[in-house]
Amino acid sequence: MTTVTAQVLPAVGAIRLTITAPSGVVVSKVQRSDINGPTAMRVLAGQLPYTSTGAELVLDDYEAASGAVVYTITASDGAVTVPLTHPLAGAPWLGVPVLPQLSVSVESTADYGADVEARGVLFDVADSPYPITINREATARRGSLKVYAHTYADARGVLRLVQRGQVIFLRQTEHDGMDMYFSPRRASLGIELADGPDSRFSVSIEYAEVARPLSPLSGALGWTYAALKADQPTYSALPGTFADYTDLRTNFRTTP
Image: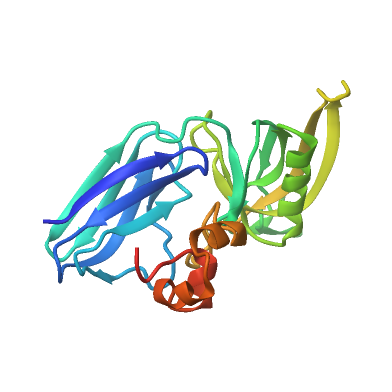
């Protein structure tokens, strides 16, 4: 029988699922349901479907909303459901969905605004006060938000995140439904309170909401070359642990 344990990793804003299945069992899908709706959990390329050899399968979810979260694991010997409540209490996160190592934690969000823009067409008709309309669905949210950073270095980190030209996600812990994926259009770093070493900094971001990216994970938060050196002190140990360079870069191990 397939079993699953869930562990909150507050330092990286993630939930870790450890799946243990009997040898030969195929784990085909992991679905997450939270306040933002149901969706397939994002995993590294090649992780699913997984045919068990008896070893543990470890999956990290960097996109779960704060609050109640339910995971449903579909395996060839049946489905397993794992519920959690308020797993990610703490600071908001901004990050790149497919590259969680670029994510940054911020102190809070403020000055949030959301507009939608109509995309229909109006044609004025002679001798009639009423136009002919071609109606289309309006845009998703567009507007601006401000995030407060813990330090100036953290504020620069947010600015650098915007510079990368990637879709960014917002996860916050205070308002259900405010989480989103967005394309940043402009950002500016400012000082909120000038008080020497205790100064407070913020970053204002103009955004356009976009659909959730579908690409697989390409990295893992906290995995660096310094960590690799400490974990694998000799070059000869690498081929036995990682199948190729991509697996090495993302800490996807052939052996535990």
